[in-house]
Image (cartoon, rainbow, N blue to C red; front, top):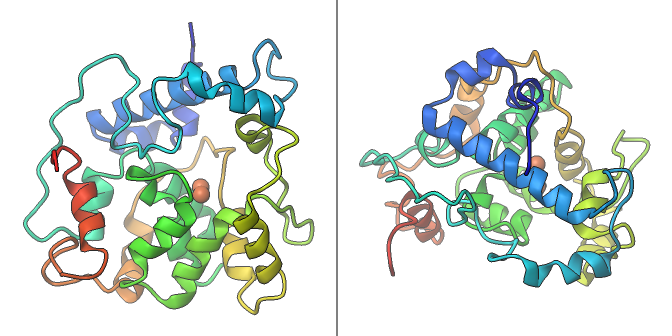
Length: 275
Ligand SMILES: [Fe+2]
Ligand SMILES: [Fe+2]
């Protein structure tokens, strides 16, 4: 039986004030995610008591113990044992904020906290925006989410913002003492302690280390929090103007603008479409 410490859980969501701003469904989703994370951690380090990490081979051996694949987008993954709820309807011309309110409930809080951290660190607005968006595509796909995320946002954000979203995924595997980025224990648990990043990740790292925009995705990794500030109040308010200045919201609404990625937005809006 997986148990959660209630205070830790509320703290992980940004504190009681932040929880008060969440809809009932968002709270239920967050609880399910937290339980899933605990379950994954427990499965990732069987018998370890949390003090050691599995090998990559042990992580691989866990694949046939699950009824789902770990790359599945969170909109499609339901491990609660309950039936899925009907999603609230989207407005006719949905904006980025509507997606945060109605469809990014599982990723939104983490992304808001990352953007908040970036803002506190005095990072420029293009990168604060990248932090705000960096994991939201996990609603439809977790595998290679940096690349999917960059594609989802490319038509609407500055090039440096989508660059940061794309490559934060690769840089998460490579520590940088000078930048203050330490390889996360969470990765030792979910990939295995001896995991070697895939060839495309290593190739991107080799490209990035001398790139003039290296600092952009690096900053996303530094602000990509796994330890949450219990006093943080998470709201979209501080980022509304930044989105207004740097996100090219289509008049027809995301998903209706006939862009090369409009279908991705429609998929997030309506994950119940059978075809
Ligand atoms: Fe990420
Ligand atoms: Fe993240």
